[in-house]
Image (tube, rainbow, N blue to C red):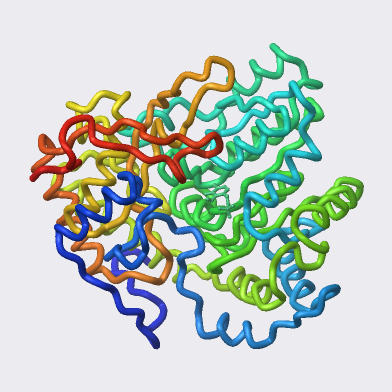
Length: 466
Ligand SMILES: Cc1ncc(COP(=O)(O)O)c(C=O)c1O
């Protein structure tokens, strides 16, 4: 199966033109954006690896599905198609659409967290943790130690550390634990999977204590692919079978359908419990829209239902993750420090090793993403101290072990040649790494600061002087 090259299981029918910029234009654009790649205009970006969220190319079947949008306010046919697809592939009983993942996180956090409760999770995610905190909860990291070590080659760095989880339960007692927030293909660890054995054990531990498990299923299919490749006993199972097995251990999920499900907008909350579903349907009308559209158009739900079916096709996932691996291998060959093993949705540069001369207080990953943009117009994203934000109690910056720049690959969008151009630019910045300077805040917003913060170089006016 793996002795031949992969190739995309599609051909290209329509193209979108990209604008090339000069270095002087990029210097100007990044300064205007406050050295934050989120604040760049997309038309100033050549290869956009900011995120894989909502940036996928939809298939001809999905575009055809848009024309079948039933835009009734209530009871749209497309809602029932979505519900059927989620039930079939993810296996949860009740499905409540939301405008995107954080809409589902908001509803779940409000319903299932009481002020003062703890929410253990296998590494934090920005919006997920923020909603947990807004509901009065406190996130506790229970991921395995290997997840915090960018050089560890452990194949399941997303795993829950059962000792950490067990200790928390003993220390605070079950009534103080809202639920286990179990992410698959953990984003902040570098797109790293959990094994099914670990999911089974973590969920069994929770069940013994009467603690519910809610799954962040945003990249569960990518996780299923790694289980098929790496976990004994799963090589002959389909991605769809593995996905169902993952979900079967949990009580429900939040979903940002903008990733695995191959759509530009959408999400859902799914739960098995009838009472919780009723409460969620009641709350969704306040914040998102009626429970049969949750802030989405009928056509969006149709595209999502079709995208779910396409996402579990093995050849799709092999090409998707194959492309990420291709970029990662090119960087490893050039000895650029990246998170290992290469993850599912992107290649993560280890900015602490890449730019050892820049102290953590000057945000090396933020500097590196700005420098990369200046070099070539490739847009990446900071995933380090700026994303981690401040400690709730002390108000100090928190410095997670991982200080990363994420080169996130949209699904079905770029070619291998784009990966080559990206690798060449990263390698060139690496060769000139002594010419990258640190940054300091000029503006820091209160919520999810990485999106809108502004910075200036600590010396001079340029972030990259090569
Ligand atoms: C793991 C994970 N959970 C939740 C979310 C939030 O989803 P959304 O961006 O659709 O609100 C994201 C996306 O950024 C994510 O990567």
